[in-house]
Each structure stands twice: as C-alpha cells, then as structure tokens.
Image (cartoon, rainbow, N blue to C red; front, side, top):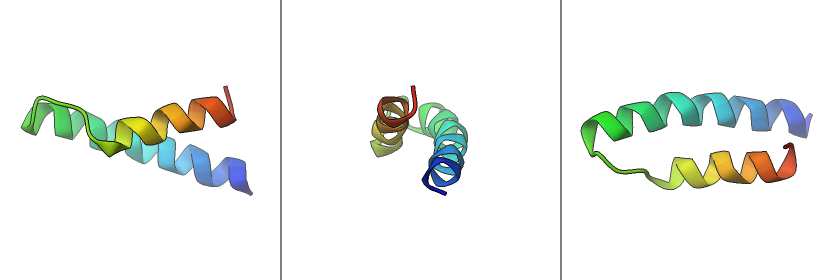
Length: 42
C-alpha cells in the first residue's frame, strides 16, 4: 500500500513541480518529496 501512495505523490510532484518552475522559476517542497520517494523506492 505504501508503494502505491508514494507513486501517487511522485506523479503529483512531477506535475506540480513543472508548474512551479514555470510560475516561480525555482523548486519547492515537492522536489524534496520526489527525492524522498527515490530513497524509499529507487
């Protein structure tokens, strides 16, 4: 179950991060979530 949740967060993070780069030009907390997801499930 945890894996499915992380995948959802990862997908949302990618979409959100793309919008944040367009709007603000800099990463936010969502990038940290993606990095954490890679650490848990490389």
